[in-house]
Amino acid sequence: MISALSHMHLKHIMHRDLKPENILCRSKDKHYDLVLADFGLATFRDEPNMLFKRCGTPGFVAPEILLYDEDDEMYDYACDIFSAGVIFYLLLTGK
Image: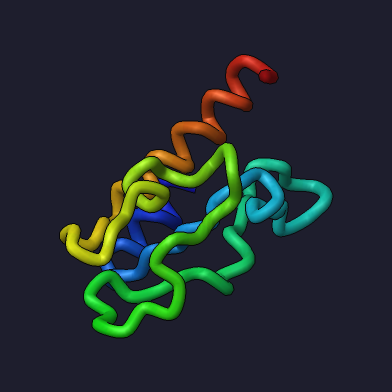
């Protein structure tokens, strides 16, 4: 998952809706071969006219997205890293 996020971020893309439901196994045999899905809220980092500035799934969305105000500086790729951290926490603890 981190490799996929790194690739997206190098292309200046933010997913903005990472959650376990958006991580899929590529095949039934290889449970370690994952793909990211649902790029409906994804956007380019420097997009001047972002359609949704506050978006994501409750419980996985980064605080900077929730607290975003029009007068604030736009958030960046760290929002995806926050969501990945929540997913890793769930995988580690089961809670």
